[in-house]
Amino acid sequence: MPELSLSRREINRLLKRALSGDIAPIVDLKASTPGFHWATLKYETTGDTILHCAARLGHIDTINYLLSFRPSSVDCKNNDDKTPLHEAAQFSQAEVVRLLLANGAQVNALKRADWTPLMLACTKSDPETVKLLVEGGALINYSNKDGWSCLHLAARQGEGEIFRFLIGQGGDHAVRTRNGRSVLHVAALHGNAEIVRVLVELGVDVDVKDNCGNTPLHEAVLGRHVDVCRLLIESGADVRCTNNVDFNLLHLASSEGYNDLVEIVVKELGFDVNAANANGLTALHCAARKGQKDTYQVLVQLGGDPEIKDKFGRIASAYHDSRN
Image 1 (cartoon, rainbow, N blue to C red):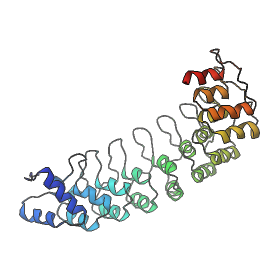
Image 2 (cartoon, helix red, strand yellow; image 1 turned 180 degrees about the vertical axis):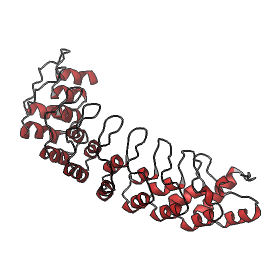
Image 3 (tube, helix red, strand yellow; image 1 turned 30 degrees about the vertical axis):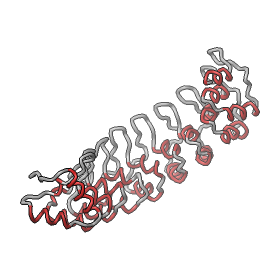
Image 4 (cartoon, rainbow, N blue to C red; image 1 turned 45 degrees about the horizontal axis):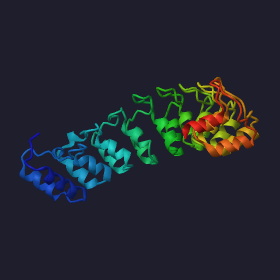
């Protein structure tokens, strides 16, 4: 690939003009420079070529022109190993995705951290782009180095149409990340009730534990989503389940300062407000340790005993004092 005798400022100026829709300078360079390759025009810090930027912005005419004389570079990579197809997928440019695939773009190309274009598309709310990639041969059940799959990402985003489409195309709803998090864990943490409902209807284990011993119900508490908590409880989730540090729902809700749920757990589910974990920590201790002063008062009003000592001999208020 021949080097252009252009300064960094001149290259940036060319890129700026091209990305505003003015590709005349690029046409002139092609005419005046034998063997000119547009991939030599890229931003130094990101490595984005003009094709990456055009794909991100949806400039169809620019893309058509570039690929008309250098189609073999459709999968050029930037400093993050992203291809133009990654960019188009991430920025919901469905027509660009269609065009790049028609020009032979690798649908399962990997960027750093092992993300495919389809995975990036699943972080958005654009069903058309997702469907185009799947139709183009994208791997639905591929997992990256951390064990995240497209279903995990769609569950986090909460786009029901995309999630149901992936399931209908054979998406594996039982897949787990490296830290043991199921698709249901992710949907619960992010409060995506529609996704939770789909998974429950599919018969997934609502009490599945991750590597920390948290169930999806625990995750819904940590995410402060009372509607998802109720949905999981109605679906048979074990409300008495504890995690690896022997925290139950009340311990977690108190630690998070989630007062509405604290009251629900005590009043509706009948939890003992003074129940202690293996280390003698009550909900009051948990609230105090995290500086949740309002929650501390709510627990006292619900019958929490501030004189109970944990296994270290400390009453709950001692944790308040240690934070000051």
